[in-house]
Amino acid sequence: MNNLLKRDVKYIDEKYRLGDGIISDDAFKQLEKLFIPVDTECDYFNQKNNRLLPKLAKENYKDFLGSLFTKTRLSIQPKIDGCAIAIRYINGKFNKAITKKGFDVSSKIKQIKNVPDCIPIKRDFQIRGELYSTNEVAGISQRIARKYLNDNKGIGASLSFCCFQILNGRLNQYETLNYLKKCGFSTPQSYFTNITSEIEIFKKNWLERKIFAKYPTDGIVIKINSRKLQLSREKSLSQNNEWQYAIEK
Image 1 (cartoon, one colour):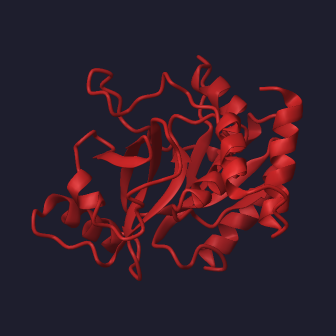
Image 2 (cartoon, rainbow, N blue to C red; image 1 turned 135 degrees about the vertical axis):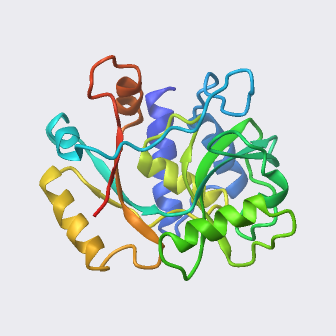
């Protein structure tokens, strides 16, 4: 993309979020379509690909932190204990929802109140999040979500969907969360830092329920913010090829 266009879209977006929009919503959406690149090779909904939703690494997160470049920007998010769900939208309309193993749960997910039926994106748009039970603790939340998905007569009134990733997107974590919010999704409370030593502080604050207390969590998740670095690690053959890690008790 032209660097000047990219700069202008970011400036307009910042003005919009400050309540000082300088162009119409329709005009901004047209610009934003140019700004949101999509990875057309990433498709978890094509059964021929036989792709499963990626798992979080859980061991040796300190080695992971030690492998990062100095001042690598990281996001810190809650590790919500529920069921991983991916949803596909085509031409702005809800198309399909699958579990991490690829099972179709579209009819169930369409009943969740905070899952949009339509979004303002006229393309193939694939997102990932967590289905969880509100006002429950970790463990129980996951059991309730799993039972709902497996029970033909279940009602998901107590369940919520938290969206945190565009599977076929090319945005960084910060931009991804902002864009998902604009599309009508609930996103996780998140923090950002480029000081790896602060991760232990975030872990301590989580254990003391000073952060992420409104979610049923069994840990926190640290993610590399840069999509470029994420993709670089995904394609790397070295042992340090993960870009997101779960930190548990």
